[in-house]
Length: 164
Image 1 (cartoon, one colour):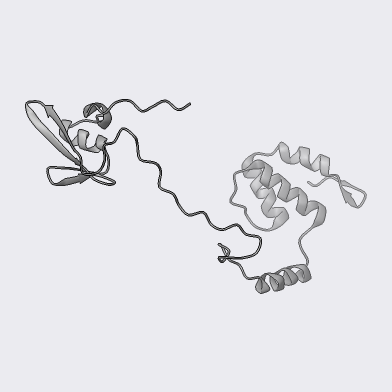
Image 2 (cartoon, one colour; image 1 turned 30 degrees about the horizontal axis):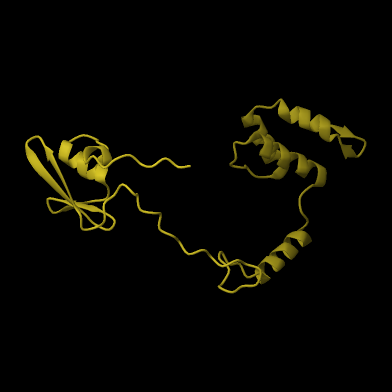
């Protein structure tokens, strides 16, 4: 039951009452006051919506019509066109720096493993072994060993330099 003082709603008493409700009861109260079931499971959101509706009531038909009229006149764009005033230019994506432990593309990494000589070709953004292309050294090392192995350790390519 809504707490009323004269013609005004006692918002503090209502807030305390809503705080004591379970989430199911709070959802039911939202349906009763607002007229539809909200999908949120956030207690604070439901409470604020109910309290706002109790204090100010629903929007008038004129207000809703005016809001729709304004919205229909607005050009909505997700990304501003190039050169749009007041909007910074979109940054050009930059490739992350190449790991300094990796040899230059075209290099062949050689390692003896279980009596077999392993040769892996370093490509620009991948690695090739036995005609197959792998996205990382670890993927190559895993294919060779049959279980996960750090590619830098497997090919003995040294430690990453510490950042200052």
